Each structure stands twice: as C-alpha cells, then as structure tokens.
Amino acid sequence: MTTAQDKAPPGAIPVLVSSTFAFTICFAIWMMFAVLGIPIKKQLGLSETQFGLLAAMPVLTGSLVRVPLGIWTDRFGGRIVLFLLMLSTVIPIWLMSYATEYWHFLVLALFVGLAGGSFSVGTPYVARWFPKSHQGFAMGVFGAGNSGSALTKFVAPALIAAAGGAWMIVPQVYSVAMLITAILFWFGSRTNPAHNVPSTVNFVEQMKMLRDPRVWRYCQYYSVVFGGYVGLALWMTKYYIGEYGFDLKLAALLAACFSLPGGVLRAIGGWIADKQGAYKTTWWVMWVCWVCFFLLSYPQTDFTVLTVNGPQTFHIGLGPWAFTFLLFVVGVATAIGKASVFKFISDDFPTNIGVVSGVVGLAGGLGGFLLPILFGLVLDLTGVRSSCFMLLYGTVCVSLVWMHFSFRAESVAEGQKALAGKVAPTH
Image (tube, rainbow, N blue to C red; front, side, top):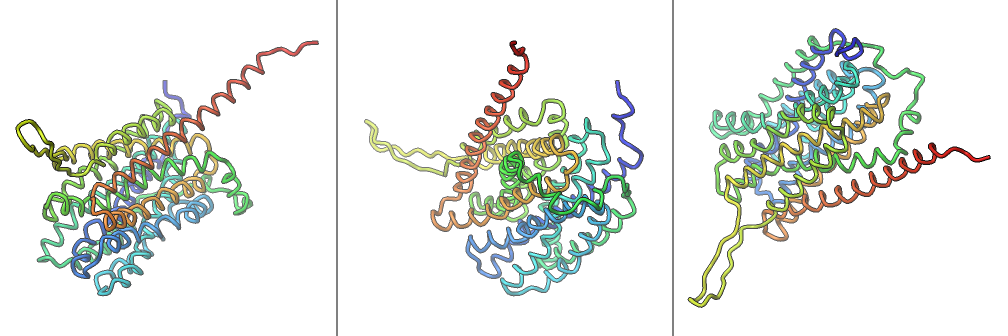
C-alpha cells in the first residue's frame, strides 16, 4: 500500500525529466573525444599515451569540480548551479573547432570538462525531490544520462561524415546543443528552497563526514564501476579500429553496445538496489565484472604444439562478436553498480548527499581520467591491446577483497553488539 510519504511531490517528475535530459547532453559532450580524438590523433600524429591524455583531459576537470559543485548544490540548489554550469561550457566547446596545436586541445578540453560536473549537481537535486523508498530509482533514472556516451558515438561519426571528414563540425554543433539544452532545462525544472542546506552550515561542518571510512570505501567502488565505464567508453572506439580493423562508424557503433546499456540501465540498477539492498547488488556487480575482465584480458595468441604428426598451430582469441557480447555484459553490470553505490550514499548520508556524492564522484572521475592514460602507456610499453582489461581486472580484485573484509568486520561488530544487548546484567 502506498502512503502519502511514499508519493513524490508536485514538480518531481518535471525535475527528473529535465535534469536527465540535461545530463545526457552534458555527458555526450564530456565524452566527445572518444570519437573526436581519433581524427585529431591522426592529424597531429599523436602516440597512444598522448591520445589517452587528450581523451582523459575533460574527465580531469569534470572530476575536480564535483566536490565544490556538490557543496554549492546543497547551499544554493541544483537548478541555478546546473544552469550556470552548462552556460560556462558553451564558448570553450565552440573554440575547440579553431584549435590547431596539441596544447590548444588540452587547454580547451579542461574547460569543456566542466560539463562532467553536472552529475554531482543533478544527483542531490533529483534525490531530494523523491521519498527515500524511491531515491535509488530516481537517481538511477537521472544517471541513465550516462547514455550520452553512446549518443556521441552515434552523432559524432555521422556529423564528421556529413561534413566530408571535417571534425570541426562536431564542437560547433555541440556548442549550440549545450546552449539550447541549458535554456530548456531552466524552463523545465523547479526550485524548492527547503532542499537547501541552511546557510549557518559552513564548509568545515559539511566536510566532517569525510572522516567516515564508508565514504572512502564507496569512492573505491565507484572508481571501478564509473571510472572503468568512462575509461572504456573513451577507449573502445579506437580499440575496435586497432584490434579488428573496423572503420570509424562501425567501431563507434559497436563501442556503443557497451556505452548504451552502461547508461540506460542505470535506472534498473537503482530499482534493484532499492529492492535487494546496496551491498548485495554491488557485490554481484563486482563478481560479474571480475569474470568478464578475466576473459577480455586474454590477448590474441598463436602457439605451436609439436604433435606426433608434426607441428600444429592453434589460435586463441576473442572474435569481434564475442568481444562485443562481453563488453555488453560489463556495460549492464557497471550501470547497475553505479546506481547501487549511490544507494549506499542516499541511505547513509541523507542530509549530505551533495557533498558525499561530490567526493565519491570525484574518485570515480579521477579513475576515468587516469585509466585512458594508463591504457595508452601500457599499450605503448607492451604492444598488447588487451592490457587495458588486465588493469581493470586488477582493480576489481582489490574491490572484492576490500568489500569482503570490511563488511565482514562490520557484521561481526553488529552481531557482538546485539549479543551484548541481550545479555541481562547480573546482580
């Protein structure tokens, strides 16, 4: 039976719809170097490491601004903060079409990356419009804006093809799209001053919850499910081109088989976390990723065996369709995991969602920044393309071990406390 407390107040749905749309466009622009970086790499003659740095540069600023943006959202409200954030990126996106040197792209990418901070604004903004029993689902719907990563893989190659191979059309179209989105968001969203943290709460008081070890634990989980998602979303188009020899349009389309479920299904992840609990959901997500990354890590291999009939050569390696299927499974798992981690936050820190989600989002974003650079560095050093999945496999191993021992220790402590409470004092 649904009670009045379980119903979303008037204005909640328009806020959710307009915020999700805005976040989708912001994420598409944040991830545009997944496609745009490929012709730029060819034009400038970049190494794999330089390409990784270029692709990751927007992720750096989009991550670093998440904590202050989360705090400002708690203080001033998500509507005005998100609106001004989107407007601040319009000119840098447009100027990207005039860049000619590598450092031009790096500097402008830092400003374009501000769009990635929209997540730490929209998450607390949306969550506070819904009752606790539906916050996981609401944040999952908003988080489905991650599908903007797939959107840019459909749109950017088509724009480049329509312009006769001129990549400059992409930032020009994206700049106009961001301006229009900001205007639509402003007229479609709402403001509720009751959702803001009182002005008497200062920065130091807001940041005190960072002493809680749970915050750092959630940072590690999110650096895997979100950082890994961002890193692969930026890397997979180029991976398909190099590994299987596909052209840009087909490579981007297959890469979207990972990016699309990794975004859209986040809403389902929020619903699952609401029903099954954040811990159980996250635990199974990590195990699914562990298995998939293990299989994806194996490089294309030829080996020769001396048999009684003479030497015989065998080949082991994933074909493009098996590879895409495993990537799809990882995309589904990370979508669910991203939602379940934020269910942890909404359950444990209901009055400081903005600050804590900003810190956790920062950790995830930094993971997304470092991974493409590490992917390129390891590829330059080893020449093995699947080494990117070897790195991710190691990070998931760390998460599983940490999760097992930390929650086991908490369960033991809670059991001992409950047992002590049942024992009556003797006289």
